[in-house]
View (spheres, chains in turn purple, orange):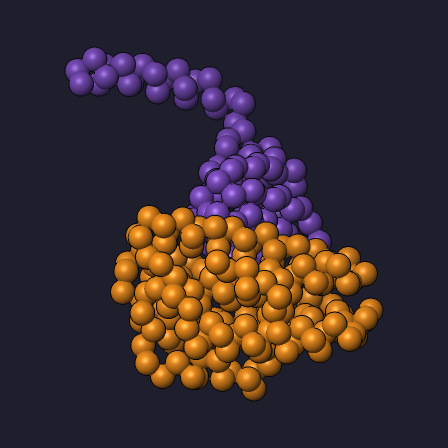
Length: 105
Length: 174
């Protein structure tokens, strides 16, 4: 425990120093029992959204007239955000599943 | 043991909500498992017929999605009954569902092209509506085992999604 407490601040400092200039982050969205969680995410252009599907059925994250990602059962799939803007997305197979992404420049 | 259901097509009009109405008594877990599994098999059979008959890209895609989802849910249901050592038990509701689906299949078999697509999709809307209603008001409240109940609850969300998906495809056919 003691060693861990000592190591953590050093590790965090390196992470902050090296991560800030690159900026691109990966935001995880879990799909469990037909729910996108978190349902709303804040992201920047260049960030990646990774959907982790815990269900036994496939899902999609679909923006009407925009991008679509298919996430196989018990698998993950990701998308790099290329444009700024706020978009609603849904699952094409189960349109009762809804999510929202706010993408800032 | 479920092969005897595979000839029927899942297509019930809203007006023919009789299959579930006949089950006045609270179904047991083995009966609930049988009903849920049978409802899935019937929709898979409908989907197979649509994939074979339809020429419409959207209808075929929808049917393939139904086949894949219901197979996945039924596989999960079989795994669960095996784990719980529950033997699914045939019952009047399963039989009525199968009979109604058979009748609908006979109707659909006479149709082609756009008429088939319209009838198939409209039946998918009605069938999911009917099964979802039964899940909500009868099957889920009657389920005794917590894991079975949870599986049915997730199934309901999946099938409510299918109902909306079918409505969307029906809208595109108009």
